[in-house]
Amino acid sequence: MEIRKSRDGTEHMIFNGVIYAEKPGRRKRRRNDEDFSLELLRMREIEKVIKHRHGDRIPDPGDTDDRETCLDYVRAAAFTSSDQDMAAWCRVWAPWATDADILPIVSAARNRQRMMRSDGVAGLLNVTLKENIAVGLKTIGACDVTRAERLRLAKDRKRERDRNAKAAKRKAEGRKNRKSYEAQSLSGQRPWDAEGISRRTWYRRRGTGVARVDIDTKCDTLVPNPNLETSQNHGTAACKVLRMPSRSPGQSIGSSEAGTDAEGLGDHPPAGCQGAEPHGRSEGEGNAA
Image (cartoon, rainbow, N blue to C red):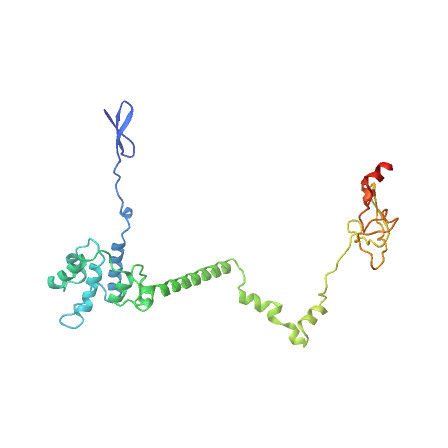
């Protein structure tokens, strides 16, 4: 049996070249390697609310009616379901709280299975949306705005931040903003109003009109007219455009008189010119021919 230790501190138990057991190495944890805890984040934000409102600690209410209001901070901290010792926490943030004040709150917190919701803490501490944004709270909601409305407002604020960031970037690059561009454009200055004419007339007098179309006679050709008999050479091949045969008003397109098989319809040559037998012949006539 042999135990080998790798460079990262992992130990391997080897027997006959086979690893039978492995013990991962324990590396030294750094301060920023702590696992994220939503409960601890909630505790830190409750402390931020206290600092934002009262300073270093919760003020001593004495025998006034504000005692329960001040104990709501202790309730909010106890209902986070964290491992924080509430007696030690109260010695820092509420030194005036007695055991008679703390023990009932801790007993009620032990009966809870989950941490209090964000809107519940906001209602307990009367945190408004304005204060939420000012302090930068993430785990505490707002008592005056619903969650759906807060999400919509957060999207609007992000959209405004992105718009301002893009505007600052364009300004740093020397670009004109939309308002300056429209003010210096012809559509913004509207010089035709000063001359007392319409916008179309003003552009027409400047020479703006229908675009010119040039025809290249070497590449562009006109569409052939089937009623005219013309001939045009393309390289070495010759193409003959045939005239459409005349027909009586009652005659259909498929019917033809004698002698019209050699003309065909339109630009298409008749069947006889394509190497096939003319239409209308029977097998006997073909054999006799």
